[in-house]
Length: 355
Image (cartoon, rainbow, N blue to C red; front, side, top):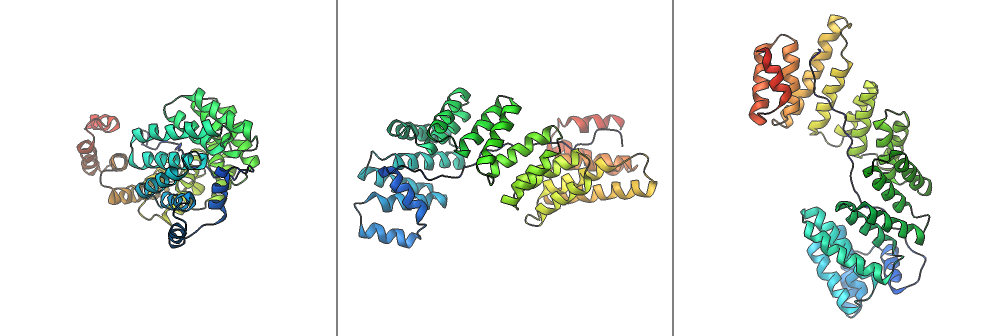
């Protein structure tokens, strides 16, 4: 099985929201934020509060939070605008509007909304330069531009306000990753974890960095991230790919199978499980073991294609495995299916040179 089989090690780098940390100050802005953190009201309770105190921004602020958490961005914007009309100079309100716009931009793939979010972030920071969440969110906007220098300045400003603020160290790690400064990125993620041992994103990203070097520490941090979020697709997938690359085939299969317990239609899982059997194949195996290993790989690739008949990489591997078995007619059918989807699939074009 010498010709190239398609199984690639890939690490997903993602941006996700950091946990919010209450501040110790007692400004009007912080009173609003603390009230949200302290009491998670139902929508009915919030509506009643608004009816009782229609001239107070608090109820609209709470309801905007509620709508944001439920991805109802339009209603969230309506309510935060009502709160801002009543009290326009409160950092908590301008920050929440920025947060709504930022999340709506990501959900709707509308970059213009990031620009609008930044207007309110800068307004928030002008009113309160120590507003940690605003500095972090502005750093994320600058990461997306990308303006890494400005992003780092935002994060340094957050740490000047609170040197023990774990999200700032996490996002510094992200900046260092983008700068390809792996040691500094690892150090930043490690600091975030030392401050907050449950910081899922820092644990995951640190695991990914170690995985790129095939360092055994990767498994330790993947497992720690799974302690925080046991059903994380990203961590289980990346852990499985790492274990595949260090030839822990049983561990890799277990990781992908764990995903299937909560996502039975994960075609990528079946594809990766097929790749585990490909990687485990050895020319010095007994013929029976070769046959069963090849057959099991085919079963998993077929399952991936059954779920997604446009899965060109799985189709290519089915072609190559059947060619290896001497089933050239069947292999050719799979290769043709690949080219129907992607006429420029290089590995398939190379395989067809034998026909």
